[in-house]
Image (cartoon, rainbow, N blue to C red; front, top):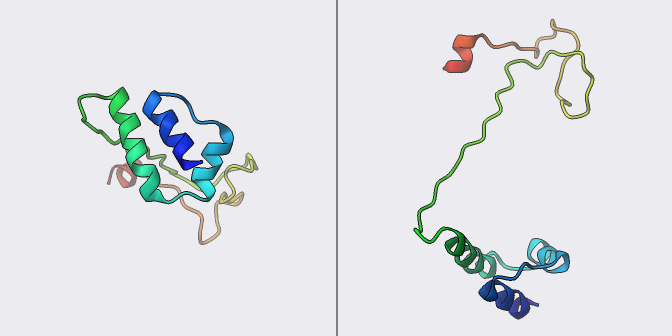
Length: 92
């Protein structure tokens, strides 16, 4: 399977779901890295890489929406582990 994936990367083809799962579950990172780099250089020939830090600041854990996404929320603002940051604390 690895040779098929290498061929696809070399020719610019997309890998399919089964091949992607192979990388996720079975492949060695050292097999993936050169192919990922090759694919990256195809799209970014200047060979310049940037990184974006995606920060989502949780300024409070007090809430009443009861959503499953925010599993850490506290409905009561008074427990010892409840917090709400000030603007100054967030900027720090």
